[in-house]
Amino acid sequence: MQSDLSEELATAERAAREAGSTIMAMFGKEYHIEEKSKGNPVTAADFAANHKIQEIIQGRFPHDAWLSEESKDDLKRLSASRVWVIDPIDGTKEFIEGIPQFAVSIGLAIDSRPVLGVVYNPAQEKFYKAAAGLGATLNGQPIRVSQRAEVAGAALLVSRSEPRKRFQPFADLCRVQPIGSIAFRLALVAGGEGNGTLTFRSLREWDVCAGVAIVEQAGGIVIDGEGERLTFNRRDTFCRGMVAANPPLARSLHAMLTKALAGKLEPEPPR
Image 1 (cartoon, rainbow, N blue to C red):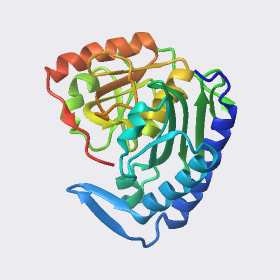
Image 2: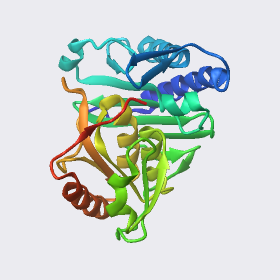
Image 3: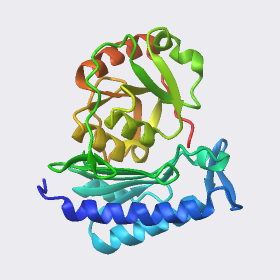
Image 4: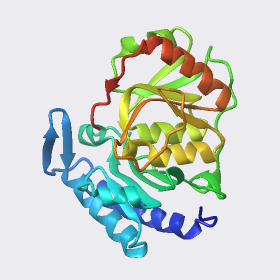
Protein backbone atom coordinates (compact mmCIF):
# COMPACT_ATOMS: atom_id res chain seq x y z
CA MET A 1 0.00 0.00 0.00
CA GLN A 2 1.22 3.49 -0.78
CA SER A 3 2.60 5.02 2.40
CA ASP A 4 2.51 8.71 1.53
CA LEU A 5 -0.95 9.88 0.49
CA SER A 6 -0.34 13.60 0.91
CA GLU A 7 -0.67 14.33 -2.81
CA GLU A 8 -3.89 12.32 -3.07
CA LEU A 9 -5.26 14.11 -0.01
CA ALA A 10 -4.41 17.54 -1.42
CA THR A 11 -6.08 16.64 -4.71
CA ALA A 12 -9.20 15.34 -2.95
CA GLU A 13 -9.35 18.51 -0.85
CA ARG A 14 -9.17 20.72 -3.93
CA ALA A 15 -11.87 18.66 -5.65
CA ALA A 16 -14.16 18.78 -2.62
CA ARG A 17 -13.78 22.52 -2.15
CA GLU A 18 -14.47 23.28 -5.80
CA ALA A 19 -17.46 20.92 -5.77
CA GLY A 20 -18.67 22.60 -2.59
CA SER A 21 -18.55 26.01 -4.28
CA THR A 22 -20.52 24.61 -7.21
CA ILE A 23 -23.12 23.16 -4.87
CA MET A 24 -23.53 26.28 -2.74
CA ALA A 25 -24.02 28.40 -5.88
CA MET A 26 -27.25 26.42 -6.37
CA PHE A 27 -28.28 25.88 -2.72
CA GLY A 28 -31.62 27.55 -2.08
CA LYS A 29 -31.93 28.57 -5.73
CA GLU A 30 -33.83 27.19 -8.72
CA TYR A 31 -32.29 24.14 -10.36
CA HIS A 32 -33.35 21.04 -12.29
CA ILE A 33 -34.45 17.96 -10.31
CA GLU A 34 -35.00 14.47 -11.71
CA GLU A 35 -35.95 11.14 -10.15
CA LYS A 36 -33.58 8.29 -10.98
CA SER A 37 -36.12 5.99 -9.33
CA LYS A 38 -38.99 6.38 -6.87
CA GLY A 39 -37.83 8.49 -3.94
CA ASN A 40 -34.35 8.83 -5.46
CA PRO A 41 -33.87 12.45 -6.58
CA VAL A 42 -30.87 13.85 -8.39
CA THR A 43 -30.24 17.51 -9.14
CA ALA A 44 -28.18 19.62 -11.49
CA ALA A 45 -25.92 20.26 -8.49
CA ASP A 46 -25.17 16.53 -8.12
CA PHE A 47 -24.13 16.27 -11.76
CA ALA A 48 -22.11 19.49 -11.75
CA ALA A 49 -20.26 18.51 -8.57
CA ASN A 50 -19.57 15.03 -9.92
CA HIS A 51 -18.12 16.50 -13.12
CA LYS A 52 -15.87 18.87 -11.18
CA ILE A 53 -14.59 16.13 -8.85
CA GLN A 54 -13.93 13.73 -11.72
CA GLU A 55 -12.16 16.38 -13.75
CA ILE A 56 -9.76 17.19 -10.92
CA ILE A 57 -9.09 13.68 -9.59
CA GLN A 58 -8.84 11.87 -12.90
CA GLY A 59 -6.82 14.74 -14.29
CA ARG A 60 -4.20 14.09 -11.61
CA PHE A 61 -4.56 10.29 -11.27
CA PRO A 62 -5.74 9.11 -14.69
CA HIS A 63 -4.89 5.45 -14.10
CA ASP A 64 -6.96 5.08 -10.92
CA ALA A 65 -10.40 3.45 -11.09
CA TRP A 66 -13.61 5.37 -10.41
CA LEU A 67 -16.86 4.54 -8.62
CA SER A 68 -19.40 7.33 -8.19
CA GLU A 69 -23.12 7.48 -7.53
CA GLU A 70 -23.56 9.79 -10.51
CA SER A 71 -21.33 7.96 -13.02
CA LYS A 72 -22.01 4.78 -14.96
CA ASP A 73 -20.24 1.92 -13.19
CA ASP A 74 -17.33 0.47 -15.17
CA LEU A 75 -16.64 -3.00 -13.77
CA LYS A 76 -13.06 -2.81 -15.00
CA ARG A 77 -12.54 -1.16 -11.61
CA LEU A 78 -12.72 -4.62 -10.02
CA SER A 79 -9.24 -5.43 -11.31
CA ALA A 80 -7.78 -2.14 -10.06
CA SER A 81 -5.82 -1.74 -6.84
CA ARG A 82 -6.80 1.90 -6.39
CA VAL A 83 -10.33 3.19 -6.77
CA TRP A 84 -11.84 6.58 -5.92
CA VAL A 85 -15.30 6.20 -4.36
CA ILE A 86 -17.42 9.33 -4.71
CA ASP A 87 -20.77 10.75 -3.71
CA PRO A 88 -20.86 14.34 -5.01
CA ILE A 89 -23.77 15.20 -2.71
CA ASP A 90 -24.55 12.75 0.06
CA GLY A 91 -27.86 14.01 1.39
CA THR A 92 -29.48 15.20 -1.84
CA LYS A 93 -32.89 15.20 -0.15
CA GLU A 94 -31.59 17.55 2.55
CA PHE A 95 -30.02 19.75 -0.14
CA ILE A 96 -33.38 20.00 -1.92
CA GLU A 97 -35.22 20.72 1.35
CA GLY A 98 -32.75 23.45 2.30
CA ILE A 99 -31.47 21.53 5.34
CA PRO A 100 -27.70 22.04 5.80
CA GLN A 101 -26.97 18.36 6.49
CA PHE A 102 -25.45 17.28 3.16
CA ALA A 103 -21.83 16.71 2.20
CA VAL A 104 -19.36 16.08 -0.58
CA SER A 105 -17.86 12.63 0.01
CA ILE A 106 -14.56 11.60 -1.62
CA GLY A 107 -12.88 8.35 -0.62
CA LEU A 108 -9.92 6.37 -1.90
CA ALA A 109 -9.70 2.61 -1.40
CA ILE A 110 -6.47 0.70 -2.01
CA ASP A 111 -6.68 -3.08 -2.11
CA SER A 112 -10.28 -2.90 -0.80
CA ARG A 113 -9.45 -0.80 2.29
CA PRO A 114 -10.47 2.86 2.73
CA VAL A 115 -7.21 4.75 3.17
CA LEU A 116 -8.30 8.33 2.49
CA GLY A 117 -11.43 10.35 3.01
CA VAL A 118 -12.72 13.88 2.60
CA VAL A 119 -16.19 14.87 3.81
CA TYR A 120 -17.09 18.49 3.24
CA ASN A 121 -20.31 20.13 4.43
CA PRO A 122 -20.10 23.48 2.63
CA ALA A 123 -23.30 24.82 4.19
CA GLN A 124 -21.82 24.46 7.70
CA GLU A 125 -18.23 25.09 6.57
CA LYS A 126 -17.04 21.83 8.10
CA PHE A 127 -14.17 20.20 6.24
CA TYR A 128 -13.12 16.76 7.46
CA LYS A 129 -10.18 14.93 5.95
CA ALA A 130 -8.04 11.92 6.79
CA ALA A 131 -5.49 9.59 5.26
CA ALA A 132 -3.54 6.59 6.49
CA GLY A 133 -0.46 7.85 8.28
CA LEU A 134 -1.71 11.43 8.33
CA GLY A 135 -4.49 11.26 10.94
CA ALA A 136 -7.87 12.98 10.80
CA THR A 137 -8.75 16.66 11.03
CA LEU A 138 -11.71 19.04 11.07
CA ASN A 139 -10.89 22.43 9.56
CA GLY A 140 -7.21 21.66 10.09
CA GLN A 141 -7.47 20.62 13.75
CA PRO A 142 -6.83 16.99 14.82
CA ILE A 143 -9.92 15.01 15.82
CA ARG A 144 -10.56 11.77 17.71
CA VAL A 145 -13.66 9.70 18.33
CA SER A 146 -15.38 9.91 21.70
CA GLN A 147 -14.06 7.51 24.34
CA ARG A 148 -17.46 6.83 25.93
CA ALA A 149 -17.78 3.06 26.25
CA GLU A 150 -21.23 2.87 27.86
CA VAL A 151 -24.36 2.72 25.70
CA ALA A 152 -26.45 4.30 28.46
CA GLY A 153 -26.48 8.06 27.92
CA ALA A 154 -24.56 7.93 24.64
CA ALA A 155 -25.33 10.45 21.90
CA LEU A 156 -26.41 8.40 18.90
CA LEU A 157 -26.72 9.98 15.45
CA VAL A 158 -29.31 8.32 13.21
CA SER A 159 -30.88 8.76 9.77
CA ARG A 160 -33.63 11.34 9.31
CA SER A 161 -35.46 8.92 7.00
CA GLU A 162 -35.46 5.67 8.96
CA PRO A 163 -38.60 4.95 11.00
CA ARG A 164 -38.10 6.26 14.53
CA LYS A 165 -39.76 3.18 16.01
CA ARG A 166 -36.77 1.16 14.79
CA PHE A 167 -34.57 3.05 17.20
CA GLN A 168 -36.79 2.64 20.26
CA PRO A 169 -34.46 0.12 21.97
CA PHE A 170 -31.66 2.66 21.57
CA ALA A 171 -33.81 5.68 22.46
CA ASP A 172 -34.61 4.00 25.77
CA LEU A 173 -30.90 4.20 26.64
CA CYS A 174 -29.36 6.87 24.39
CA ARG A 175 -29.90 10.43 23.24
CA VAL A 176 -30.97 9.86 19.62
CA GLN A 177 -30.43 12.71 17.15
CA PRO A 178 -31.54 12.51 13.48
CA ILE A 179 -28.99 13.87 10.98
CA GLY A 180 -29.27 13.75 7.17
CA SER A 181 -26.19 12.56 5.28
CA ILE A 182 -24.54 9.34 6.49
CA ALA A 183 -21.18 10.68 5.30
CA PHE A 184 -21.71 13.72 7.53
CA ARG A 185 -22.85 11.53 10.45
CA LEU A 186 -19.69 9.45 10.19
CA ALA A 187 -17.56 12.59 10.13
CA LEU A 188 -19.37 13.98 13.18
CA VAL A 189 -18.66 10.73 15.04
CA ALA A 190 -15.01 10.92 14.00
CA GLY A 191 -14.87 14.39 15.55
CA GLY A 192 -16.58 13.34 18.77
CA GLU A 193 -19.74 15.34 18.01
CA GLY A 194 -21.73 12.18 18.59
CA ASN A 195 -20.65 9.01 20.34
CA GLY A 196 -21.77 6.71 17.54
CA THR A 197 -24.02 6.18 14.54
CA LEU A 198 -25.84 3.16 13.20
CA THR A 199 -28.30 2.17 10.52
CA PHE A 200 -30.58 -0.79 9.98
CA ARG A 201 -30.50 -0.21 6.25
CA SER A 202 -28.21 -1.06 3.39
CA LEU A 203 -25.92 1.70 2.19
CA ARG A 204 -23.81 2.05 -0.93
CA GLU A 205 -20.03 2.14 -0.92
CA TRP A 206 -20.04 5.76 -2.13
CA ASP A 207 -22.17 6.80 0.84
CA VAL A 208 -19.63 5.67 3.39
CA CYS A 209 -16.12 5.13 1.97
CA ALA A 210 -14.78 8.57 2.88
CA GLY A 211 -16.52 8.60 6.26
CA VAL A 212 -15.18 5.16 7.17
CA ALA A 213 -11.63 6.31 6.41
CA ILE A 214 -12.08 9.37 8.63
CA VAL A 215 -13.58 7.39 11.52
CA GLU A 216 -10.79 4.82 11.36
CA GLN A 217 -8.06 7.46 11.27
CA ALA A 218 -9.74 9.15 14.25
CA GLY A 219 -9.43 5.96 16.31
CA GLY A 220 -12.87 4.44 15.71
CA ILE A 221 -14.17 1.42 13.85
CA VAL A 222 -17.00 0.91 11.38
CA ILE A 223 -18.61 -2.53 11.10
CA ASP A 224 -21.44 -3.89 8.99
CA GLY A 225 -24.54 -5.80 10.09
CA GLU A 226 -22.48 -8.97 10.37
CA GLY A 227 -19.92 -7.31 12.62
CA GLU A 228 -17.22 -7.22 9.93
CA ARG A 229 -15.02 -4.31 8.87
CA LEU A 230 -16.17 -2.72 5.61
CA THR A 231 -14.32 -3.39 2.36
CA PHE A 232 -14.64 -1.50 -0.90
CA ASN A 233 -14.48 -1.86 -4.67
CA ARG A 234 -16.75 -4.90 -4.72
CA ARG A 235 -19.09 -5.98 -7.49
CA ASP A 236 -21.97 -5.73 -5.01
CA THR A 237 -21.61 -2.19 -3.73
CA PHE A 238 -24.04 -2.56 -0.81
CA CYS A 239 -23.00 -2.34 2.85
CA ARG A 240 -25.75 -4.09 4.79
CA GLY A 241 -26.28 -2.42 8.13
CA MET A 242 -23.61 -0.36 9.85
CA VAL A 243 -22.30 0.77 13.24
CA ALA A 244 -19.56 3.36 13.83
CA ALA A 245 -18.04 4.38 17.17
CA ASN A 246 -14.97 3.70 19.28
CA PRO A 247 -14.29 -0.08 19.41
CA PRO A 248 -15.96 -0.98 22.77
CA LEU A 249 -19.07 1.13 22.10
CA ALA A 250 -19.32 -0.12 18.51
CA ARG A 251 -19.37 -3.73 19.67
CA SER A 252 -22.05 -3.01 22.27
CA LEU A 253 -24.19 -1.11 19.77
CA HIS A 254 -23.72 -3.88 17.22
CA ALA A 255 -24.97 -6.48 19.70
CA MET A 256 -28.13 -4.40 20.20
CA LEU A 257 -28.47 -3.88 16.44
CA THR A 258 -28.21 -7.61 15.79
CA LYS A 259 -30.95 -8.31 18.32
CA ALA A 260 -33.19 -5.59 16.88
CA LEU A 261 -32.62 -6.68 13.30
CA ALA A 262 -33.64 -10.29 13.86
CA GLY A 263 -32.18 -11.02 10.43
CA LYS A 264 -34.07 -8.25 8.60
CA LEU A 265 -32.31 -5.40 6.80
CA GLU A 266 -34.05 -2.69 4.84
CA PRO A 267 -32.58 -0.88 1.81
CA GLU A 268 -31.36 2.63 2.57
CA PRO A 269 -33.50 5.17 0.71
CA PRO A 270 -31.28 7.07 -1.74
CA ARG A 271 -30.18 10.48 -0.44
